[in-house]
Image (cartoon, rainbow, N blue to C red):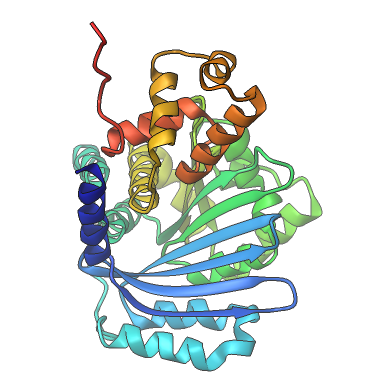
Length: 358
């Protein structure tokens, strides 16, 4: 019964996010895949890049018009070997997204309306819905666009990065191509602090950071506000998230407006990043299948049985039991077996509680 329920859930998930176009190619350094999928009533272009086992990067670009997608592809220097595929990707998007769709004028919002916006973002069912609300919120506080990022740097051998390119796709590509997110003063601040900061307040201390500041101006970016989201829970999938608002006005003007809404922006950023993580989790879990043995192991975790005792009960070595836990963690994309259990219960892969033998 549980297997059938999961199969139905996977079918529903596939129906909600049908694959419209995909292509895959390799360069001398990277393995790259582009996908165009429907997310609710909108489209998302997803770019995945891997370099052996040392680096994994996913960029998601919610689409409102084909111009944004074209800019995103044109600035991808690694795509020069697959230009015909890129053109097909654009043509596939054109059949769904109107190229001449005008951006909506967003009226100014007061703090109460922005708080309601944060609540709506927290309940968004699709990434594109959250993207629309976030874009409107950025514009209503005098900013022109945004980018969001999730980073996992716990392992020295593997780095996981997920980047959501908002309304500055060319800038996002520039940063990603140079791995400059590791040098950016804003992202360094987001990794080490949990307070909102204005770009003018964060000094560029390294040559890479100074390059970022210079390049930002060439892309028309002058005002910058970074709102970090630190994940302190044990077993969290990501080390931190960051939402960065960009503006084309000078810092003294653009950042002043954003600073007046600092508390509300923090709520918006937290709602958006947490919702983004939840949608990613749902996407990942929709493909997870647990064996009966793995369910038994998670049940023992829930009962508080340690790995040594589990090994003794099952006649296995402790190392073998820990290897099984590691594989379960990898399925859910977490670092801790208790986090894997929580996700499995939340998504119906495990019953909400075990039945007592009494």
